[in-house]
Amino acid sequence: MNPSEQVKAHIERVDQSLARLRAERSRLLARATLTQRKRDTRQKILIGGAVLYLSFRSGSRATAACAVNAYEYIAREGRFDDPELDRAVYVESGNMPSWAGDDAGEYWDAADLYERANGRLFIAGDFALPRGLDVDDRIDLARTFVRELTNLERLPYTFAIHAGEDQERREHNPHVHVMISERSNDGLVRRPRDWFRRADRQRPERGGAAKSRSFHGSSRPGRDWVERARERLANAINDRLRDRGRDERVDHRSYKRRGIDKEPCKRFSSQAVRIFERTGESPQLEQAIAIENMPRELASLDDRIERLEQIRADLVLEQSALDYGDEYLYRSADDGPSRDSGPER
Image (cartoon, rainbow, N blue to C red; front, top):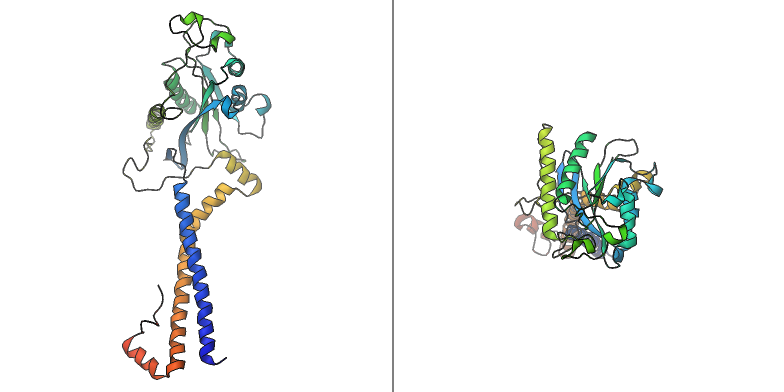
């Protein structure tokens, strides 16, 4: 193989490397775009280094939900009374019918037994709390918000504040779980079985407790209700922060609605964090790290591509000199690189 052919083979290898790097760069950009589209669209608020959010979901038989299990989980009772789990620092129930007494678990167990086959057992919600508040402030904030959601229609509820601590018992993600029943407590005395019967609007004493329509809408729970709930939570948090002399404030609206060109924060579940702490691995966190490192990866790829393009341009000049003689180099130096010899961009 003569020198010109050797240089030509070298150029082909460089071209192959450039094609691989450019394809890798395209895949990286495509992955970034796809990740952006799949981002969690729930409201996220940044306060003092903690990401707060509010979400609701339905607990129904169709999704294999169990009300008493959900209650025991958030209250850390029964099989969930486990020191390995994030501890519940406070549990409160309200608007319960007289037959439930002080045992909220009896109410949620009755919901599993007597609610209609196609009925919704409960509305479940969870929201984060600002870090740095003491227990009394957390209780007052959570109680204020939950009662604003339930007291107008006297809807039975249970909420539990979880400490959100890491393995060293340091504050990490304090949050609240809440369960809300759609059955309005009208004060009439009913047996548990009768409480969950279909309501009689004309003669309430003959039917079950009426179900609220607040949660119904274009989605379940209704979007309008959820929007109002987010605004109430933001107001409750801001009032508490203001009372404590803190400057942080939250807004229930998204960055887009406020006209702010900023990427939403990414929230990771406490389960993902616990998995990472135990095993050192977590698909969610690894994906986040990959996204965080993406600008550096792109910069590295661009640098490698630029260097290879320069090498290719030098090889093209060398091959031209071998094919056409040294006078090509002098002409190139005077006139600049020819169109064929310039770097590919």
